Length: 405
Image 1: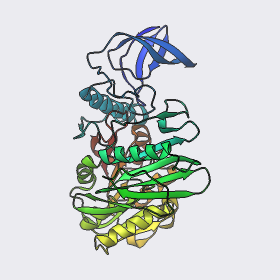
Image 2 (image 1 turned 180 degrees about the vertical axis):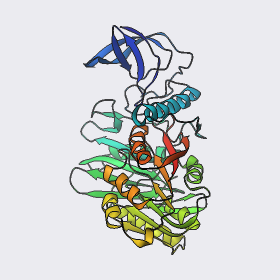
Image 3 (image 1 turned 120 degrees about the horizontal axis):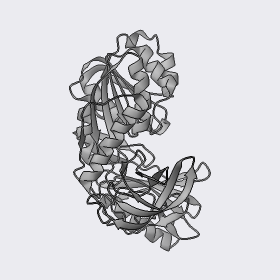
Image 4 (image 1 turned 90 degrees about the vertical axis):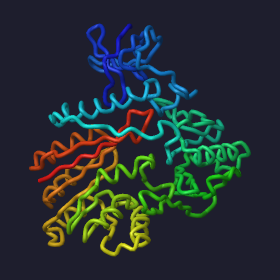
């Protein structure tokens, strides 16, 4: 089947039409004329892969990564960077229009300072029997063995090389299924994940190249962002592109100030700490015990006594505090949920608290649009949208939205 790619859809697939069908093509660029092979059909939609590039798009680039097309990551390498940014803007606009019925005003996307070697967090899958360490292959659970990852910061590339040396001499835990790694200011930490409830971690200076082992210790790193210092571990969620974090924090919080602020899904306190510089009374809510402990330590290290972090499921916390006079009135709520977005009961709980202003930080345009439709139906208006290319070479994008009641 021959097709011409019209545009890039949410999820990163290229859209085409042929033989009365909608055709979605992986690893395509807008304007490509392709011969494709249909892999599966769902209703009137065919999902296809590229057999031949008949006429490449002028926006197509040669992917520099030797694992492109096999590794499940970095599905935008086939497009030049300007086209990647334009596609991400269109993905956000498409989701807002199609899901939330929002015709978004023109907005910008902030480009990444580094299109490569930006990723400071990673999860490497481990196949001990096959001696493979890397990422899952696209659409499978087979491990793509990776020796050099083009998007890792140098510190994590060094750690990957250490881990591979450990795999070669069989010093890695043979029953580990994956390793999570994070780079900090001068150090990196690795935690091994097992099928059972068993975790080990290993910390080393990021410049050392000694073979990695898995010791019974809990490692942590520190990361300095916009003058604030954060402690975190390999299992902690933290934004992966630290180059853009000062701008992301500034956009999310900026000149916001007042008496009371709440951050939902606060993690290790990335936004909680700067919020406590601007508001008199700040509460962070986080369900993960380790992240909560790190957030409390980070506030204490910053000598901020006007903020606290509560370990709680976000929906449960909102239900408990619906009538809490401490949050009446509530000046500002910032939420930064996981990719799945906020549960309906979380949106309902936020609306019951009636904050004057809201900031939603999202890593998924589709769930963002779904949640915004409920927030706007609850009486809030959209004030601004700004996107950040936190994940170059992939279809993922970060969006910061401000609303007011």
